[in-house]
Length: 132
Image (cartoon, rainbow, N blue to C red; front, side, top):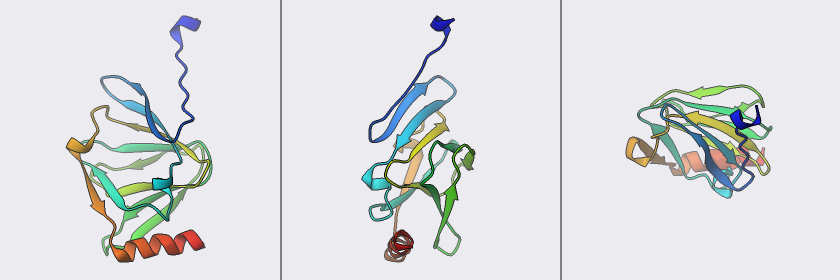
């Protein structure tokens, strides 16, 4: 039985692609300074895949772009599954010590994703959120 079970764990900073096969990738994402409201500088969107986030701890939020250019900051509850649909601008806002499991296509990368730098108003919105 033990030969048929693999166990994965990652406690470093940022993302590790912990399990990858032909159909999907499961990663562990831990807090890193770039995920903090004071340091976040862009949103991303994936052109070929939805992205699933499963928070393991509290202190995680999904940031998405509204039609008017403002940011929507939604808290995530540990143990729930959050799906960001393919093509939706997003990023994950994390606080120190937080952890997320993510699932997406294994070939997801910069060659099939885009980034959008945050403008001054959006950065101010994040900085204001950080103080509340």
